[in-house]
Length: 370
Ligand code: TRP
Image (cartoon, rainbow, N blue to C red; front, side, top):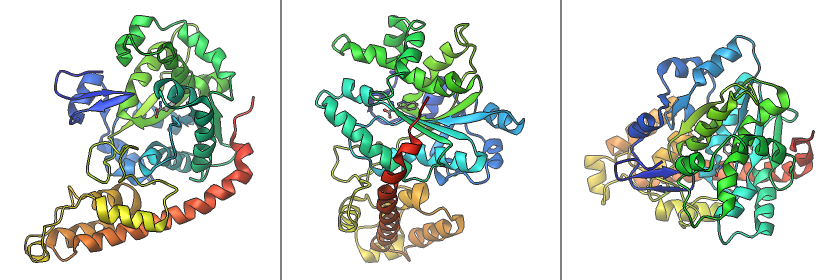
């Protein structure tokens, strides 16, 4: 949706400085409030610390769960490349919801979407990124037997659901919701029916119930479209709930972590690469000389290393607060802060690499089968 101010957010393009308050207003979503925060006990820092900031009907999802009704979680991956840290955001939250609520998680892989929208991406490459990305996702530790992954180009039965949804979406609706342009290939026009089929998939295969979809706020147009068709008499489904994340800053402090930047941390990076990237690119909230830093202190609120600790790597609130105070007071230098982050990332990536190897052996048990 293009808003009247100087930024624009669509599923395939984000430009300008994003005003999140305005998005909540324009999209008609709700802020995640204290009641929701207090209800969650073991949520991931991304959810506890406000990176997930907006929702649709997540309160109803929690109520349904508490009333003993079936609930599920669904979030997908568009496999356009190897995965980087920013790509993990919805999946870390999906996993923490599965851990807390012991529910089923569904993970569609939209290789068709990326094939349509990335001009350079070949069919073969889309498939091979899918296979690689699926291993990264399994490595996060989702529960076998309760987690179901499917790839559009492989689980082609998804088409029979997409077709039934496509029939209920007009071209002008899709055009308005997604900002489709005349020069876009017609794959773009059909794809929204696929993603709506993903989102309703848990209900197609398990019957009507509430599903929550953790996603970046740029994906909300799909949620809206799906909510509009869910209750149609063809389906009689429940409107899906959503949790919306802000964009994760790149190391440079740009609002969205993007693959084209050299400062992106890939899950496949070696310890040396991580060290080099953080030291060279992680935007610092420190002063330019040590004397100034000791005297004036650093600014953790704009420091990307601190933000990465807050979002991903330091779940312990007391430890995080301590780092905040040390850095702000000038007792901790930028190099020391970076060192903490580098160690945490490398610890995570080291264990991730091992779990990704393990994932190859258990892959088949995660693939959805009729
Ligand atoms: N379109 C999403 C992306 O580009 C990936 C995706 C596919 C998805 N199906 C989904 C996200 C269903 C949420 C729900 O990242």
